[in-house]
Length: 57
Image 1: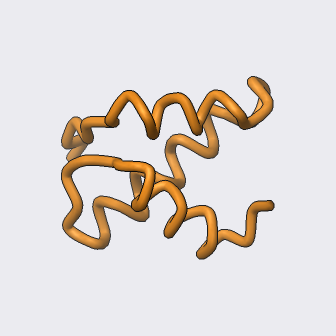
Image 2: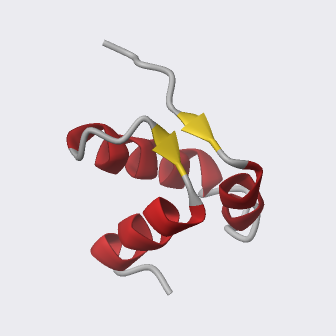
Image 3: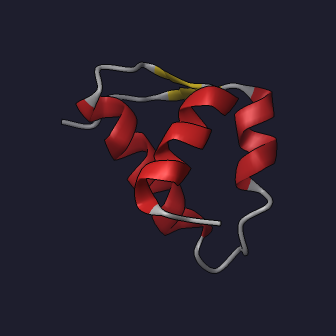
C-alpha cells in the first residue's frame, strides 16, 4: 500500500539540506514515520519530529 504523502514546499526545502546520496532513504523514513502516525502531509514540524526520532543532526 503506497499512499501518496504530500510534502509542503517548506518540508521539501528542508529535505534538500540532506546530502543527495541519502535523500531517497531519508524521504522514505520520514514518509513511513508519517504514515505510521496517520499523517497525510509532511510539514516542517513533521519533518523535525521524524528527524528527532531518527537522531539525525
